[in-house]
Length: 105
Image (cartoon, rainbow, N blue to C red):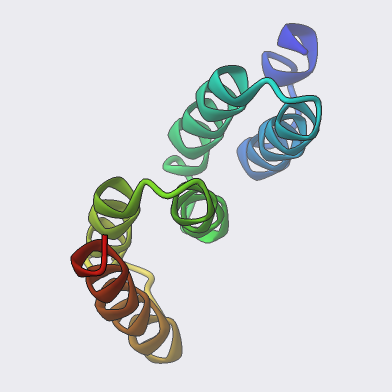
């Protein structure tokens, strides 16, 4: 894992590798390690114009029931320099949905 992440591949490829590793770790029931891999993936992705990995992490946190954290990450994405208008709408809808889920607890 570390060798791939620290390799000379482009940043976006490395971010996707970390995200895929996070998915495998989650499927193995290793949730904490999956969260760490997602965090590392997002850190690497920040060096690019992409925000796909960050949006996947926000969605993953939502599925885990971490609505506040997920909403915060979606809110951060709303300030991304390369954000597309259609993604802005989706992220805003997600924040509203998370707010409703949080209120219904």
